[in-house]
Length: 138
Image (cartoon, rainbow, N blue to C red; front, top):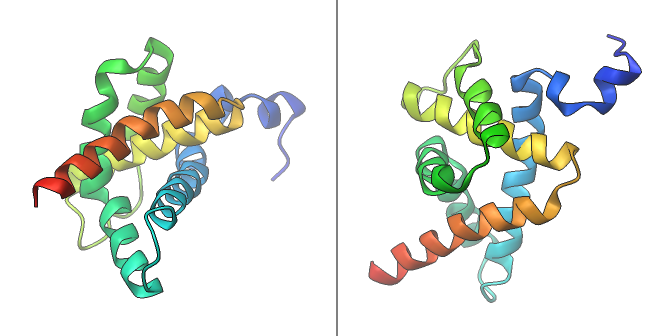
């Protein structure tokens, strides 16, 4: 499939599921990067923590955490991702959580393609701080 130059360079013209595909990798890399900075632990323990943070329910919660600080444009992208028709929902995921997670991933993919790494970091910082606070209470 050949994209026009405008489609290839403009993230607004990409499908929400294509944005989510990229955003999934961006989000997981941020999670892995932050986990690896928490000190030395076995790879399996890191993997278990990463899965806990990137699963649909955790990403749906993350979406709620950042909703109040999103711009109109970011909210529109998140909603496009949330409302995209995905062909499947993993058997271990709640469909509503999965849709919200897809919206979050679409947002992170969109911001990545726009080159807005600082904004990605700002949003992820909110999510990460909440995760750290929740784990202190456990």
